[in-house]
Image (cartoon, rainbow, N blue to C red; front, side, top):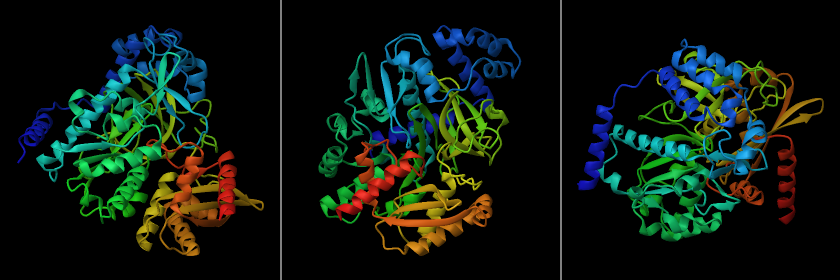
Amino acid sequence: MALLGSLLKNGIRLTNAVRLRKASPVRQQRKAFRKLIQKAQFTDFGTTYRFNDLLRAVEFGTEQEYYEKYKEFVPIHDYNKMFEGWWKRTLANERNVTWPGRVKYFALSSGTSEAASKYIPVTKAMYKAIQRTGVRQILTLGKYQNLPPTLYEKGCLMLGGSTDLNAREGHYEGDLSGITASKIPLWFERFYKPGRDIAQEKDWALKLDEITEQAASWDIGYVVGVPAWIQLLMEKIIARYNVKTIHDIWPNLMVFCHGGVSFEPYRAGFEKLLAHPITYIETYLASEGFIAYQTHPNAEGMQLVLNNGLFFEFIPFNDRNFSPDGEVTESPETLMIDNVEEGKEYALLLSTCSGAWRYLIGDTIRFVDKKRAEIVITGRTKHFLSLCGEHLSVDNMNKAIELVSDELGISIREFTVAGVSHDTLFAHNWYIGTDDKVDAKDLRNRIDAKLKELNDDYAVERRHALKEITVTVLPVKTFYDWMKSRGKMGGQNKFPRVLKKGLILEWNNFLKSESAKE
């Protein structure tokens, strides 16, 4: 048994064994809030919104006083409001705008819907917080009894954006994964793959090719990345070396740490690439921070990071608080973590050590274990369909695709849905990405039936205003070609599950152009 691996695993077990009992979620959040407000009280944002009064309230006030004042003093911000009011100045190298000092790094993010890039500040405090949370996640591996000590000596392949960041007038821009990879600690470099040289490559296709050529010389134990791109890379490696599974190249691969999208639609196809089962660990790392991660085997959800530079608020995701287009209403109800309920859907508001304040990141979550503060991601505030009251979430869509894939024994790698007018009523047009043979009509009927079982509102509207469901089956390559045509190839880019407004026209025009080439 390898000495280093044994020492690392025993150290992880010891750390878990002696870790002090954590404070309650609401106490952790109060402490996190105090630290954030104290640090930012003398910034322009802090003086504008009376952070000194908030600091007195959190230190000397009653249990709820500081949060009531926070809601009173500080408005909710979406990206446009935060950028135009504050971050535009930060991007222009002004100091002490929403966080002390000057921000050197900006994560470029467009989510999965907007065409224009968003500039999300990444402060030194933030990337240090992300590193701390990453270490905490590694420590949870000690709870997985099936992982041998030898794993802790193996390589870790992190498939992300380029570490060769774009220099722009006093700051650097790039994917968050590229920013954080450029800051990996020295002790981790011996384990990190693809290594600094390949990690700098900006051409995504070339990066995948270079990794493929080097793959046989690496002993990989972990892979980290978005499921679609990891699966595509594994397929390239298997084809390059003419083997049956990825374990023929990486026999010690035992862990896949995934995030960004639900893994379930990919699971069937992904597991065809393996010779034996591996451990899956889910993470929730957004451009705005490391929000949550799976902390124990067989966990139903991910535990929110409550004590490391993030303060959470939750807006009940309902018609009172959001318009049919997913826009937040003028005075929505907001809750702290002690007032949420299991099983209900919420939109996330974040205040962070990168200078985001009451910031609507656009994701929706559901609590599956309030005591543990464990959540699952259910979708996006603007990535749901409710043309006529069907309230169809991405969570519903993922589950229906998973169930139908299992029934038919096929792998559905990508899908998207467009809500459109149909005569005087409405329709949903589904586009399914699979390279397996399947009857589109049968697929349509099965998806429709599953959604009726999963969502009562959908079942009601299928009898009334939602008059038509169509399914178009496409090769998986079509989805990736569209992303490439939009400059959206890369580790943090995902295909939108719901097409709205201009994206519907853009997608349909792309399909017409592809059809004309045939």
